[in-house]
Image (cartoon, rainbow, N blue to C red):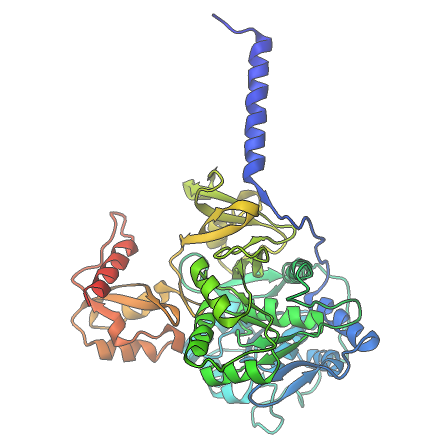
Length: 562
């Protein structure tokens, strides 16, 4: 029996409505609503706010960044002038690489590069000359700014590179050229309205797979993410105290997270500067300095990674007299902290612990946990959307999962990157149609639209929040004459979160291989001989892909047998 055209049309209309409502229900939006994008240069956005606090408020003689080790400080009343003066000595509209630890000079060099109309790439101060040279070449940097202590490494990295110069910003008496005494390249820096969507910064991330690659973040990406953070934190004034009008924030923030990393760079440094708060920075981490800074400097907010949260809880357990009376909140990011651990540590520290979520590719923040759900990374940032989906067909097919089911987290918002530098294919794999970014993380949405990260699609190893690419270590291992095949996976570690563990095929000495590898790598990427396992073969699929799950299973069995 045939259906009438009217009845068929009614059925089609009903199906369309069901599909429409189903799609709407699976497109998660922020409970904080929308937010206006910042359409100006990042440095100008920060400097305008600083100028407001200095001229109309209480920040003229207030410290912006204080080095806890050297005692050197950057005063808000001097910040703008020092940035503008330094900017006149830089090549305009060029790429500059900042190779520095957490010092006041970092803030000056970073914003001076942007004021000169250029873009800045940030590198790990622990890098060897080989690693630094790779980033200089890949980023296209024509000049490197460092400090006198790191000048020998920079000089070694630059000696084989043509047309790359370097200078330092912390010691006028150092034989290496100081920007403080260098001649001007511009008489003054002019400000003209420019495309705020132009690339401002190129931090390096391993993305979802492969060797480290430059992430192109625009002025709008970074400045809008600061606004998103401010908007959310204003809802919790009992913990966070953002600036109010011309009155700068009274908060003192712990500056232990490295400024070269997107979390330390934008969520800590740039956000703090935009609020007129004070950062007490630690150039090189050690446990004693870490605790002393928390105690002696009236720190109110501590941005940490899970291994540091665990360390603090352990320190209090072994020394009950250790207290941090001024600490009002801990913000934990860069890696997940499970709910049970979060609750236990919060009780031990007598301080609320809030988690967040983000990545280099999202400037970095996409989620905030101010609802207080243990184990949750919280709710979406203002103006941010996400989906949980099964991704197939090279990203061309997205199948949404139902609420309560696990799916890969996809993000869309004003903080999502422009793309990967010089890597169009990687960009296409990560930035999908309609602006969706693949995070490589698997998440579940719970009540109150809070999200929990439950797994990781990507293969990255996170050591104390810093990314280690298995591909980079594998590539170096395979260059050793005694090694025929190798694969690197994450080994769980209570103190570091994860550590790299290598499975290696060949006739070799573990100590020799460890020394060979570590000479070429930053400390956090090191492979101890105990984390090198000799095997007959690396398990691989028919297509030649390493079966890392099998290796992780073998690693678990290995530890259980001890």
